[in-house]
Image 1 (tube, each protein chain N blue to C red):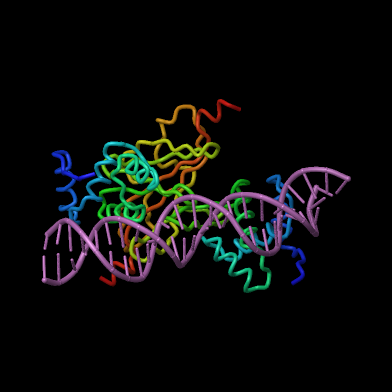
Image 2 (cartoon, rainbow over the protein chains, first blue to last red; image 1 turned 180 degrees about the horizontal axis):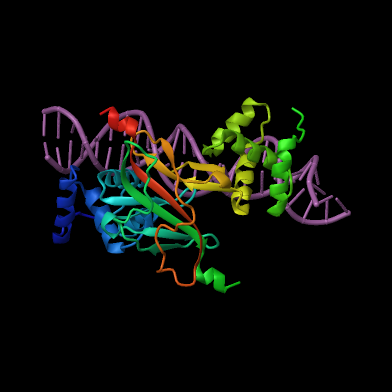
Length: 145
Length: 145
DNA sequence: GTGAGTGCAAACGATTTGCACGGTG
DNA sequence: CACCGTGCAAATCGTTTGCACTCAC
């Protein structure tokens, strides 16, 4: 498939440049896809979706790109257990609730600026972000018991 | 090495029983070690330490045991990125600050009961735990720049 | 005695890496 | 045109699993 930059992609192009990253096809593709899918997704999700659309990037490239984007602050990564990180656009960032039973991940909106608790015991450190993972049992799993 | 239960281990024996787990050598060993090391450690840390002391449990067993203890609520696991979870005794549980530069993990004491933000958008779910990971740059890395 | 837990080794799956090529700035 | 980013495949690493054996209850 030939890749042509759409008008919407201009947006991402700009964002990449602002972040000091080069504008490349894989990066724009991943950003656009994350925007379109609008939620949290694993690297594998992203890769599969791209393969389905014949825009297959290498799995390795997907990981590299996601990593670059996370470094640049355009994308957030949440680690929710051994072996699977989820990614989402920084602008739609929220915290997560993970069900202990079915492993479902539910978004939890939180006031981003409201720092959950002051890390007073971190003298001299620069805290950029606080990521919260709630654990418990989701409504569905509670119901089926 | 012959394993004999020490007086101190009686403590763990009791804790295991209370949690409904059978009292076995690997479980007591891991609990005692986590207590002795008093901090957060990876499964590999634990395995290596045990091997050094000729009390080698299988790597697989260490993972199994840690998992059982987490299920039982005696141990807490924190996921801090791809490929490495850290474990610590539930009684010394705290949150973590992860340095973006050197990957160091620093403990952050937080009032455990003070729920960081109310997950009001989780109707019907039962929230057991809130785990917070702060990210940023630690004092040392800031200094060396 | 019976089933849960262990030990071992092999399987697995997510992520990383090395190297040659191509495209961006 | 220099270098960063990509594609590809193989390597790595944390973690899981299957099976036979042992031990706690």
